[in-house]
Image 1: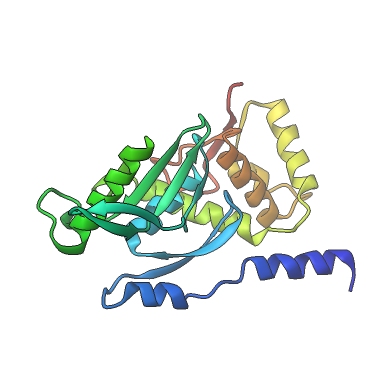
Image 2: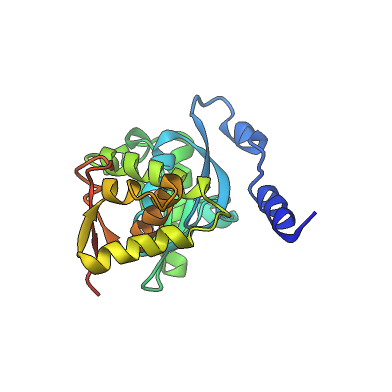
Length: 235
């Protein structure tokens, strides 16, 4: 077996996961279970619930976010005067150097009228965050309003990056660079129509540059397609 084959085999092993722990965690709840391959943190993991999944996918396109931990270790806090162990849904690391603790909930379980386990859990997490001086956020489906197109775009862009993992994209990157040297902007269709490139690899190159903030596109208001206009981000 050659070196490339060995590296490919190791890469597949790193991205192989089991959904069994997430199924056990779900218990009686009817939440969807998602398996997500994150290009930003180069990790495959399971996500419990649609709200959590959508928020994590949106992190992929946030250029202010350096990375995130979707499976943080449990923390020990206090709820109702008693020790309470809880696990956050994500710890988000920003380019500025700050971290934030995130918990995802349905709005009905996040408000002041919340009851049962959610009340103790969120109170314990807020207490722990305050103790260590970290910003703590509870995000719900209300925070996703107006972001459906952006979510759809990043879901597809992440898939494009993942499909090209391990593939050489030097030719596609050079064609893109040459296009943007001649003009400050071009459409995705122009790039995809170049006979010198592989369309799937070109899409992956464009997706990576959008994620890195080196390219601009109107991902919030328009579905990403061949007519989408790409431009270099001013330095």
